[in-house]
Amino acid sequence: MILGKNKKRKGFTIAELMVSIFIIFLIAGIFLTGYQSSGKKSRLKMTAQNLASDIRKAQGFALGLKEFSDTGETPLGGWGIYLSNVNELNNYYDIYADHTEDHIYQEANENFERINFEGGIYVKEIIFYDHLDNPYSQTQAHITFEPPDPVIYFCDQNSCINNYVLVEIILTDRSGDTKRVVVNKFGLVDVED
Image (cartoon, rainbow, N blue to C red; front, side):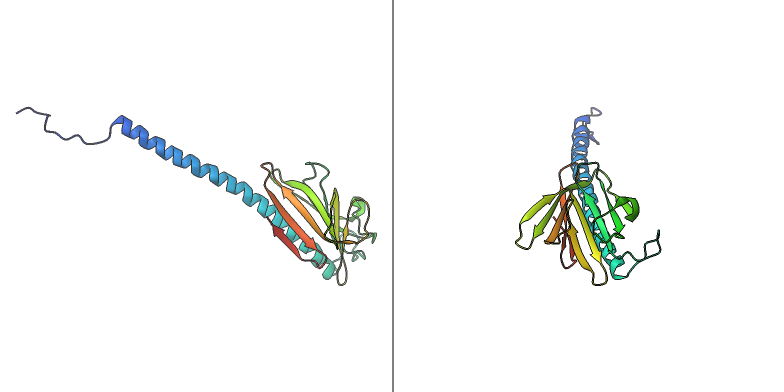
């Protein structure tokens, strides 16, 4: 009888272990890539939701006749949101109290709160629409809610003629994904893909 010939081998060869480890790393790499991409998309979606919420906050301030903390008075022109897309450095928006009643944001004396976008997100485009649904691309948007109704004013960088019935704010991130925040003349705010 020869010893060792009848023994069955137990365990794995080095080649089998290497193939198994490679498959595990491949699956983990695919999962992590998808996970990171979904994290960026959810950050953009959260930023768009926060902007929509702050537009509603300004609307609520106007409805509630909130006083401006610097003066202790309710701004007669209402409350608003200011955005700009002049360049990628405009990665913020301002909530303002319209003391001058011109529905145009005056940074020196009307700023209530500045909110910064996070993670490379910025305003890519601002589009105003008139009653005939004609689009007008602009570099600034002043969305003001004047109490007590509130009446909504959509103003661009040049004027506040109130011919616009809808404003669309397109947010983007470094990967090129976009989200749209839409405000209509009735004060409805929506986030769309």
